[in-house]
Length: 206
Image (cartoon, rainbow, N blue to C red; front, side, top):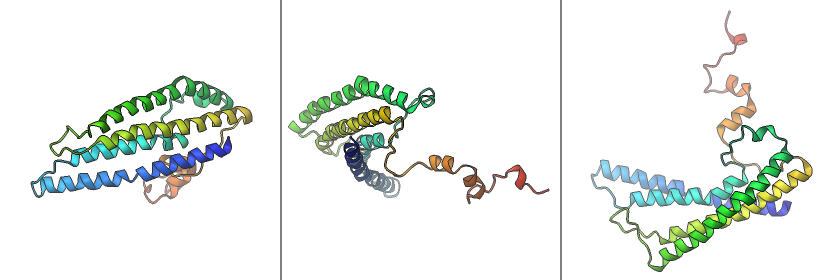
């Protein structure tokens, strides 16, 4: 189980980080559109299509990566009070009740949706540029398959946690600044170059 978890985590991370570059393509596309629209008075007919296709692709392909790092939003006001084994038991049930049925429905529906789009080489109806979008419909299938692969790894994590009483630690990776500040505690506030206005009572001049 542990070897499969490592495999799934690495696979999800590879796809997530590769498709994260979509944000640069989207940024350059939108930046170019702003320049030619407001400086040259010559707006493009394709910038809107580029922005939503790049954002949608990045959003879909990052789902499994986010799941592998336990980064999805969770209403944990009760969940966090439970022991790890109890958390794992509840998650295990929820994966089979909601996660896998939902993701498999996404894959099968996406297969029909993308197949229909490929049959007539669908183009965007959002702009006069007629940008081809049939290839981007395949992202739905790819994202769903990645989520299934990662979901199996999450089930294995739950099983290991039930056995050992502790969650297996995910691989070290990037994290939000908020998490870093919470871990470092007050030291980050007292010594950070951006936090010069935070003064503790004992540091105040007499």
